[in-house]
Length: 181
View 1: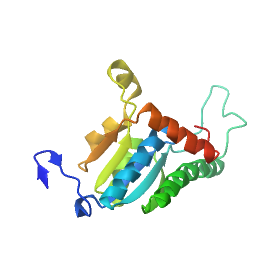
View 2: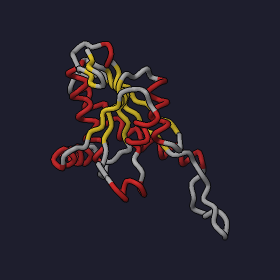
View 3: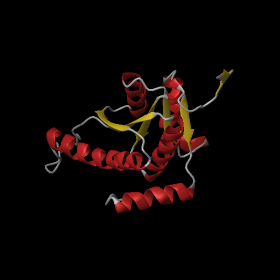
């Protein structure tokens, strides 16, 4: 049921059966993911947990490439390991709430575009993501993945600004999983 731009969220609503939950590994994004799992449970929806990794680039300096810089293969392996730890945390929280979670990792230098493309590829009917809630100059200089995602997609986007308590809870879960928040 929808009224203009307002959509009613009802259990077993086929309109919201797959929710894309992007994370960057921050406590804020993990807190938003935990809230997305609660919503998915209420809607009896499945979750696609997603981590976008920047594409490998050699740093170029006047003196050349730094000696200790990892190879592309090492970079990708390290990034996948890190992404898997964050996504495993979301998956474990989903299992605890009886919510089906699939994990996806992709190399893409544009996180907002990657989110939109993954949502389409996975046939997601909702994107649920966290935001710092920046405004003014900080938003202009730092940008906002949430805002860019909103402008790039036609899929509904639910943007959550976790409370300090929710972020603290996410940090504690991360520590329990041996992840530094």
